[in-house]
Image (cartoon, rainbow, N blue to C red):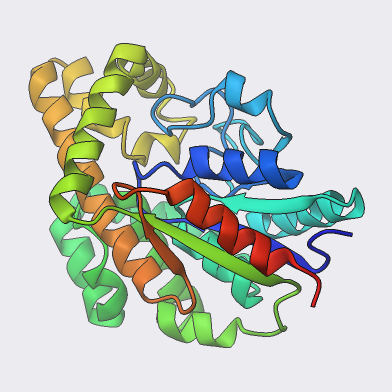
Length: 311
């Protein structure tokens, strides 16, 4: 069976063509794609999350894309369980799992064999959200920095969902994110993995690609998708904090012009790409390919074919 015990991983920052490469590998190697994106997992949110198009998803089977409704909370622990089930299913069919996405924690957890426990203290979560409204973003970010400076350093002060989640986890466990990560290493990875990371040869080229993609998303109807999220922001708690949607809320509230909100989205996406590069840069063993250089598909396929050869 091709690829027995092995998985392919396509990762890297936003706007680098991960979806196209994963599709190419899956088509050419007899594979199926497993989404590793914390927002593409939601149904109906396709433009702002840069989810695979219906045409792309018709070419090979996809898993964990449009997987749960946007009002449903979904954690890394839930994703790991669902991803492992999907990989087992793919391998049982004799096909090659191709994990694709930009959510670093998902990918790192899968390839390293990490396990997480769920914290279900809704009272603490509600308390922290109330304190955010009372004390403001800067004060809550300072609180996180006091107990977990490393985690605070990589989170934007206005990233409400992640700042409060990090605070909740610290308060619930008494551990920093790094300590929890170390404690979660319970089992060896279930599969051998080849990780192919996509990037641009210069930061300027990456930023230009991000700006261009935002313009394309706007043409495809991003504003109306963001309006849907805004109308349901109380129910779509995670999506309402996601890059691609929250930047337009001031426009819907008549507090900022559309051009300013679009510019904020481009800047937020560039900042997110920097955080992704930092995360993936800390992972060992990624084979990096520059997408603005020749022969990316050929290089990636050669790597994958060599990896999948029986030993």
